[in-house]
Length: 422
Figure 1 (cartoon, rainbow, N blue to C red):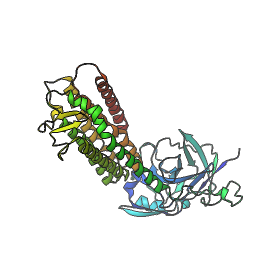
Figure 2 (tube, rainbow, N blue to C red):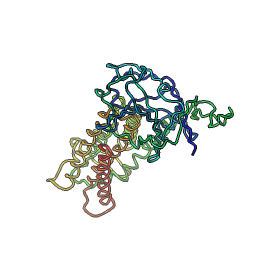
Figure 3 (tube, helix red, strand yellow):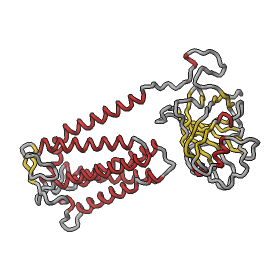
Figure 4 (cartoon, rainbow, N blue to C red):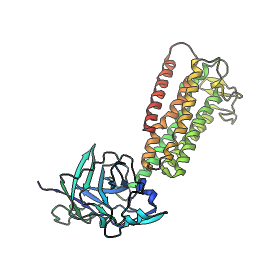
């Protein structure tokens, strides 16, 4: 049976700030411009990460693993691994040798084309839609002793290091121009250059800004109606004072905790996405607060220091001194216990999320996805506390909703903790 061709091209790439300690981490290795590095089954793949991988403490084998993505923007797409075992005691110094010997932060120029064998055998395997191309030819380095170096030992998801029964051949080629198995023709149909338009990044930003404007504008228009139909019944059920300021403070703190955490994550280098989300939350809060003040408050007061609010034909009196009235217990009852559980869980989640910063092997996209898993918890717990301020005893829609939201917030918290620590 004939073997399929896997085409490759790795031009020189400068990776800054590397040392021997980098070998035990995920090394970000994206080219500054979009360059096709692998073509397999007529689909282009672009290098994203590099690992110096030691699969087992008992096995001395070290593998060079290059992770690729079929999306030039690295946001989604298929994953393809190119893996080759590293062989010490080679005859010539290589770019990889420089990295193996680097004792401090060094800018390493890697030309991986020099380390791969054109025409070499490979085994293509697929696991959970992730493709592995494992090379039979080794990557030779002159460094003789690899035993004193720490390598990456965490599991690489769905990587298959099987070189038996090779079913493919590695072919070096310039992949951003015409190429096929027969190398026939140079028409537009043969080009494998990335098809992402130059304006795609701009369009993504425009779409994100438009979504932000729609959300902020929608909240500005609907906030008074939400107050009228949802918050007013809760406030009216409290016969011993109207906790208007207290509820407003609860939501301000919930937004504030999120915004502070997002800014810290962005400043720690986890990506600009955290800044965008923080900005959106700040605009959301400002929009809600402005809308409520304009529509419900007279005499220029704000929601933190207001005597009354007028919702439709209902005038509610506020207790300005009781900023924490929603947490004042009448003895220790179920309502107070649930509120305290919600507060402690929210604070625990806030602290636990900082494990994302501590994980140096987590890239920007993965960090943001993991944060978004826990993101709804803040609002679910604030909503739980708000609904459990409702004090009427008869079984009605809000009483049913109290238990539904409590169950959802608890379930989401458990699920997000599993996702955060797995």
